[in-house]
Image 1 (cartoon, helix red, strand yellow):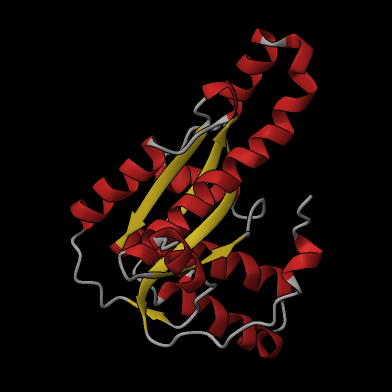
Image 2 (image 1 turned 180 degrees about the vertical axis):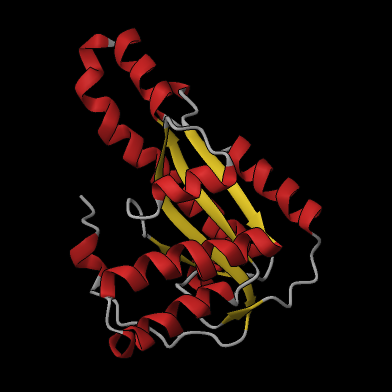
Length: 200
């Protein structure tokens, strides 16, 4: 049995060696990402997932200013900060970022609409974020781009929302960095699949 999906899944990795040499235009990429988001499922079809795409100067500002300076203040020591600075510059050197959010207002509406399941809405919200994250990751890899996922929330939330005019009810879940692949990562050791998947 042949599966293109499996081949893409095998190639999907956390790829950090990225640069800006992407020959797909911003508009075409944005349209592609919108299609992925449009077809990603969500609990009770609440469609609570939200994305903000940052290209060019906005992408650079997120990493070079917001994340960099927030972490610089936290670390304090410039010598100790050098390793962190190199890491953040690696994200900045990539082509673009996708900020992945959940709309808290939608989740509150779902709790009111389905009171019997209200306590499940927040865990389901995390599942929704996972669904769209994996869809994006696979989608980017399928068109030859690499990505990695970061979680600098909540320490960058307020400044990020203010800078990019993002709704205060949106909850930042993750930041996906993507770009042209400079170098593929080394293979990772996988556990025995029969320990992971039990067939009855």
